[in-house]
Image 1 (cartoon, rainbow, N blue to C red):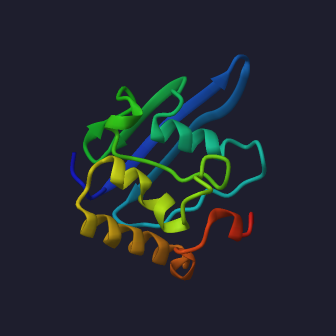
Image 2 (cartoon, rainbow, N blue to C red; image 1 turned 45 degrees about the vertical axis):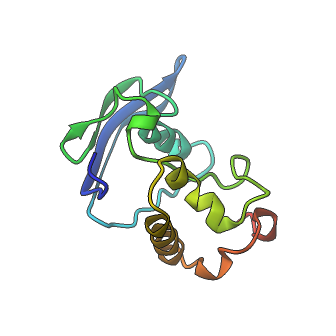
Image 3 (cartoon, one colour; image 1 turned 30 degrees about the horizontal axis):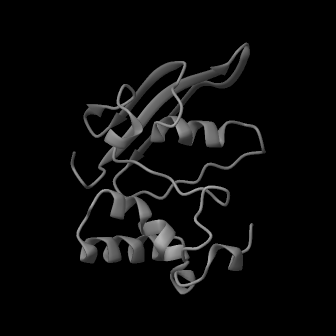
Length: 140
């Protein structure tokens, strides 16, 4: 798969039993846009991200990355990942090492990993925190 994401688009519905958590939720992200999902606890933000990453299936809908339909592929074949705020982070690793983890698992060359980690931390204004441990960060 192409290493550069040009577009991500989806229209998904997710039900847990009779409860509809996402009802025909649609989003399109192009190029290097920075997008934030904002809403109250329980509104479906994490559910949507988990579906995109392939951690849980949608009940209905489609997920496309560039021109390739991805909703039928397992998580490890999507080339997409997410970093959780706290419980899924490695407390013995630094912030930068946590960000690099998925790239290292994909066996990217070291210089590419370093570059991507620096870019990711800079994009969220956290470049000064790369050397800190998770417990040294605010939960907010």
